[in-house]
Image 1 (cartoon, rainbow, N blue to C red):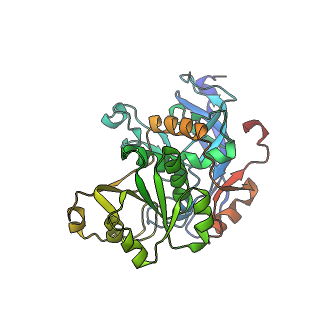
Image 2 (cartoon, rainbow, N blue to C red):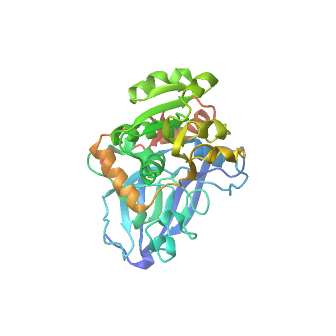
Image 3 (spheres, one colour):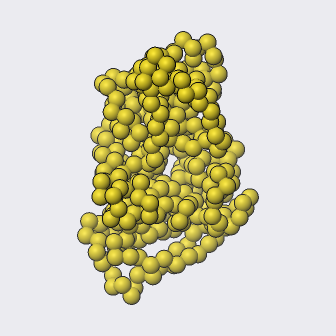
Length: 349
């Protein structure tokens, strides 16, 4: 039910990192439910590499206290007075972006992810390492019935990011695509690429990922083998880098055909060097970045994932083990997405 404005100040029970190097500890904050907002009881949330980089202040811009986790699924509990499209009990997913101004040039163009007044987890909002979250209802997306709640969690950032990057590249049919880095983003990219009918090659320095790559319908290319990379020179329509560590940008560009595109969807913690001549040397190559996706991208991505049965590889742990989960991600002990489930998740499916 929608509640009167006087009833909409909520006390949120969460876990926060209070300073660099600290573990997550109980944290309470108050949050009003605005006219267009909803209160969501979180049943599932992820801990991803990006969350741990925020926790560890990898980019030297983390604001503490930090409540991390930017991918979550839950049930609507309360709605603001101007919310018409959602009701208590609805199963929804929430990602990195929690709000926008809906009045700027970008919002009016339908690319709300570029809004300069947006509300995002870890920058100017608390995230999903909590019992509940308040989010603009226009950024709480109903899950298709075919999507399992836990498996849907990584779709709301990792899945959306690679889906948006790939579709906005407007690739030709049956394009040949190289995905560099086969972590959470890379695995999701391989699944979406296969569902689009593209030929995917996974560039990785980890031979132990060969079997997973094969199961995802892609070919393995050893990223540490210079001769193997040289043999692939000029063979790809699209290169997608999912790496958040420094990599050889020049080497990646040499993989592209003329008119090929390289897209970066993760932020390395150090600057990359570029030999600019590679952009025009017997070609017309492009580099662009892609930042999550619009609300329209989310809706299309969820429909596509449900239709093509895209299910991320994941491990589910109890929410109470959140600090263990953070440590495991930090130590690179997890080869799948890691989702924390609350004790009572039966209603969320």
